[in-house]
Amino acid sequence: MLLETLGEIPALDGTARSRWLTERPLRLTQLPRPECGPGELRIRVEACGICHTELDEIEGRTPPPVLPVVPGHEVVGRVDAVGTGVAQSRLGQRVGVGWIHHSCGGPQENVDPAFCATGRDVNGGYAEWMVVPATYAFPVPATYSAEEAAPLLCAGAIGYRALRLADVEDGQAIGLMGFGGSAHLVLALLRHVRPASPVYVFARDAQTRAFACTLGAHWAGDTEEAPPTPPVAIIDTTPAWLPVLASLAHLAPGGRLVINAIRKEDGDRQVLERLSYHDHLWMEKEIKSVANITGADIAEFLPLAAAAGIRPTVRVYPLEEANSALWSLKHERVIGAKVLTLRV
Image 1 (cartoon, helix red, strand yellow):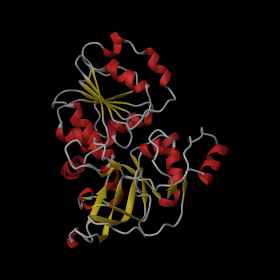
Image 2 (tube, rainbow, N blue to C red):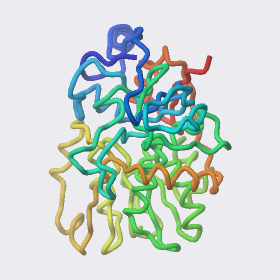
Image 3 (cartoon, rainbow, N blue to C red):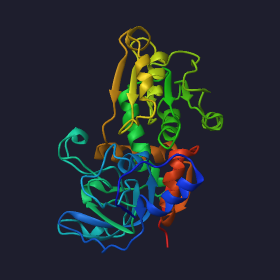
């Protein structure tokens, strides 16, 4: 699927939806099968997760440097070709690729100028084949189907990074602001690595809150509803600004807000006029952003997810319905993660 133009996904209206789905932003087309360069391998894609970052690319908040481009950065498939310098033993291996396509390889490669994003800076996984440097293709635990594993490559691994940045000790309360593809995996991870910590989920939709409770949340409330106790950290995975103010108001003194988002949309930016130093920033509260992801995050998280028995909740679409899936992600209630399948 090629992204060829940038533009807002229109408001939820039947006529606008029909036009958008037929005219933009993704077009199904035939491209030459990519060939491996030195140090690269080629993947026959089986599944690719759908991420809110694709909306950010489409709507220009993190635009691709060149169009057209194939989006998609939660990729699972089998290695079917290798370039020079890559071991032949990797042929047939099932691997996953995340948002990091390649970088400098250092501990801060996620913020290094060399960082290159899968599906934005280079072609990604909304396709039958893709190529990637061999060092950024990670073995996928056999316990997962391709569709289950796909969200782990971004929603799961970036959630793992956000949790590490939150720096919560076992027994301390933590909040999850928004409960989509990433947060529902963070909750499962918390139940494994911080079993004594109360987890509070903030979500606008009552069904989403109920879903969070079925997965083990100790409490679930609306965005601005006060939790039972002030959490020492909150991870915000939403595209909006109100959750930032609400999170800061909810935090315990000395608490940390970790914003796990590539960009924030402008729709409710005016709520920042309500920012109060006393209510939101005083008492040594801290804001930390999550910038991209490292290869180490993915390599560490995948076996940890398998050991924890994490099972993503997914809704599967065929590749040809990518536009419909993106529309749904933008406008409809999200339970778990959305995944495109390319199985033949």
